[in-house]
Length: 321
Ligand code: SF4
Ligand code: MG
Image (cartoon, rainbow, N blue to C red; front, side, top):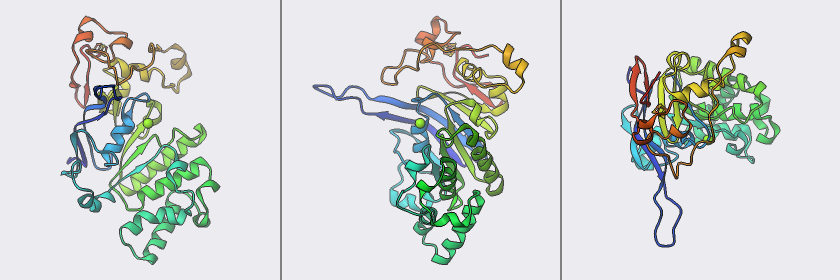
């Protein structure tokens, strides 16, 4: 099927710290990221903090201008389009943020917050009122919530408001940057379940960003794993969860709890040594090699490319499973 979003060789290099005479080389936060998002699907984008997933997410909806590569929405390059020409497309891709309170204006009522994207489209007052009432119900809030302010809500409810705002213009794509990471564990499943239901009802596609594979397991159709600014594995959910090809994916998966207690007790746990290295000073060759249990000599000198290792799945490793 035709891609909704096509991401090609996307890169973001932040300027390096100023030296006394000249700037040091830049920091590559995102490097050579390529993937598609299909209409109505969920792509889970997973990696440890600092791997570049939020930066990638912001570039997908042009909240941040990439320094390399391009993003096409329905075949139209949105990377270097002027903000003026981007405006009619803006309503078709939206974003949900990690901290719902920080992303909602504390001085606006729920009515005003959800109405804002519709007002930007020039809808009539009556139409906006009716739409906003529908939206609050769609996300499981009540009409009497409309006149309240964000601080009067719990974190989970506030995220429902953020979701209603993101869906107000009936977008085809929503990039959700760790939408449940700031919420209580007991609330996380409710919000993920809500997003799944909304996808079924509205046909919206998601890029769902998370720092562990457990959160995106149920909602994702495909999964991409990032490490130090690059995608190291991407594929159909079943392939990635059941037969991970990349040692990093295997390590992340070994931390996902198994439902069967016997399997949970007897499973192999892979504990990665150390923290992810700084993108300001990435290791040579395969950047995962200092932490990889399978690393060999070649890994220190030669960077692996993302290649097909099974139908529907690519991995960047010299010695994939
Ligand atoms: Fe590990 Fe080598 Fe594969 Fe990198 S290329 S993930 S170091 S085995
Ligand atoms: Mg982040």
